Image 1 (cartoon, rainbow, N blue to C red):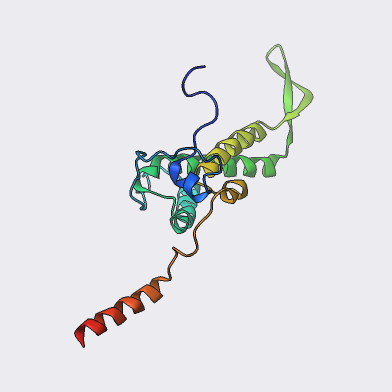
Image 2: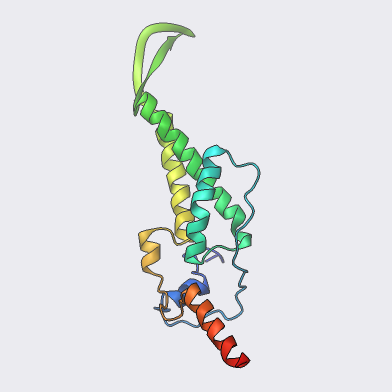
Length: 172
């Protein structure tokens, strides 16, 4: 079987968060990119840019976004914008549209009913969106496989207060 076929491996960070259910050896040499907000590409349209601005804070809160994820996130936003536009077209013209029947290149009074091509565009864009959503852990199923150790999460304000208390003890 050629290399690269079959199920895609889950990143080690997600396997650790998920509890390493298969108990397989974890990849200790996997690169760990620095968490951060990637720059929004200049070519995003209005809808895609709005989705970018909406989703980046959510991904940062989950702790799954790094600066090198910009292209994958931009691709997701493009899929989202394409889906949004296609759904508007379906809303405007309907799922079934009329297509004029031509006879020897001339228009006739007859029409045939056919599926709106925007339906296919919408379905294709949704598949693309779903694959990116899963990659970023943004579906219920993807999140159900992630475990976060609540003990490690600290309230930033509480940490600040603790730090201040420790500094006061050293001064006195």
